[in-house]
Length: 137
Length: 137
Image (cartoon, rainbow over all chains, first blue to last red; front, top):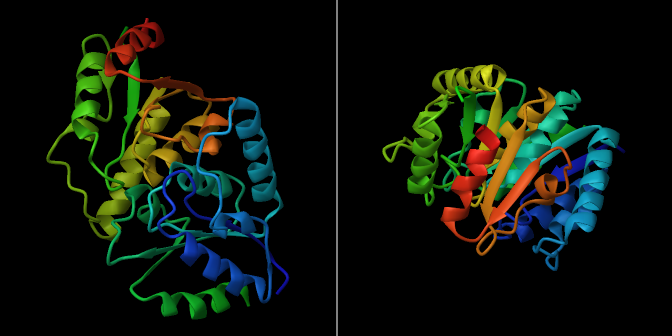
């Protein structure tokens, strides 16, 4: 209850799962705070914004990582940014939970092989919600 | 000359650029050592290997990151593992050079916005080789 969650999902790596991110974020928001609500917004800009604006995004996202109580990532879609955020959160000692659809994704060994992470493969979206309840309780 | 290079490229995130990785690795090997030569091998297994083997991959790759003098990444293909490796190398203070094809890739703001990284967009593969000469000299 009232935890600050950094939700991580692909933006420039591809938006195939944007609607899924939005459903997960909305579910978390019933009880807790999502610092990165924009990750689920369908109109998110995927283009590079230029050096100054990209530096501002980086500064904001790393500030949110430091402020967060935990990180929840949906990793079915490959993403350089999410990989970076996971390592950054690990270096801060933030608990990290990684969901991915095992029917369509082979997750990186840098994540599955890192015992620090809680890796939670699923086959149906409905499995995610009780796992979120457990994480957030 | 004789630098130890950690070359980072997508494996489970997709092998569309595997032949490019191989050409870049071969070029670097003319003068220096590539710890991660397998990243360019066409027959690399993309499937998850199970907890024990993935943990061994993670242990080996992070050992190579610690041993390396610098990291060179080809980031045109999104990859959770490469994003993780970049943040890990940054945390160790290793110089990091990121190449990507700007005609087909919008690079993550977690990379373009992080002033620690040397980001080198290119439009033609031939531009990469003189940049590598400069990095490795």
